[in-house]
Amino acid sequence: MFRVYIAGISSYLPENCVHNNDLSETLDTSNDWIVSHTGISYRHLAAEHESPSSMGIAAVKDVLQKTGIAAEELGMILLSTTTPDYAPIPSTACVVQDAIGAKNAVGLDITAACAGFVYGIELARAYMQIHQRPILVVATEMLSRVTDWNDRKTCVLFGDGAAAAILLPSPDGERGVVESLLKSDSSGKDVLKIEGGCRTSTSHTDNIPLTIFMDGKSVFTFAIRILPAVITQLMKNNGLTIDDIDWIVPHQANYRIIHSAANRLGVPESKFFINVQNFANTASASIPIALVDMEHRGLLKPGHKIITVGFGAGLCYGGNLIIW
Image 1 (cartoon, one colour):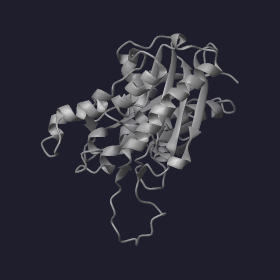
Image 2 (cartoon, helix red, strand yellow):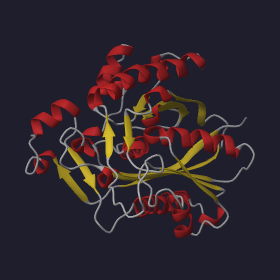
Image 3 (cartoon, helix red, strand yellow):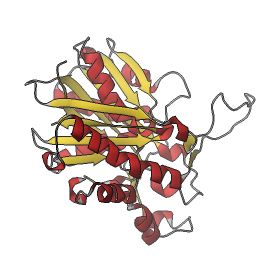
Image 4 (cartoon, one colour):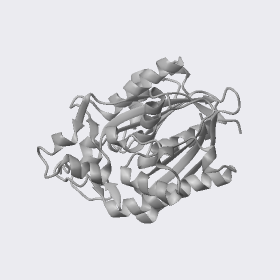
């Protein structure tokens, strides 16, 4: 099996950047409370005219230009989202495919919540072993559309954003995805969900808004258990120690989760890249947005060993060991 690497990555964030103080104007909350409980200060929220697909398309166009890949060259578009343009069909991947003119690509959505980008990287790696054509992995999330803005426990957590990555065969056989770990613990399927769908019997005239539900305590307990476990397993499988790892890039759900996981591992928090303070929880888009942020800051160097860890509804989780 040859290695597949991320040849380019781009992100898109809506222009509207909302500070905690803006939320406290309409909610019984404060900047101090939000920061102390989540680590979040800002989040980007989509405008009325924007959609999950339009955000994804913006990121895709940028990464295609950056890598010099033409849309017609793409063999597959894997798109992760918990907030599709349509529920449930057509797939948002197909909306993006049509918009960019990727007429030779296969397009499909991934429903793995906040682990979607991690899943997408591994699915792309596997598909490319047979069909050696460029693969586009997109994560686009518009959580502001499924958030109850009167619920101060959840609405302060989320933001909107998108990112897109082009995957190609490794140019030197060294750079790329070394191993991925994909898992799910379906016993916790009810602790994080967006209500709606065919499981609930409603008439076609009912207009029930989709709203995210989260049992915060259960999600926190799950996250601080599996985050260290994924990191430890990927290192063990590949004969590595924490000193061999340059960066751990976790899903940016909540600062307290990352802090607790670092303590459990006995690893300095500085080993984790954290930018949840600027973008909040953007679900599956958070890891690729973080990678773009790291690139912009000059933190990613060729040869760096990186572990990504995603976790979310399902409960899906997993990680990628990548040589940048």
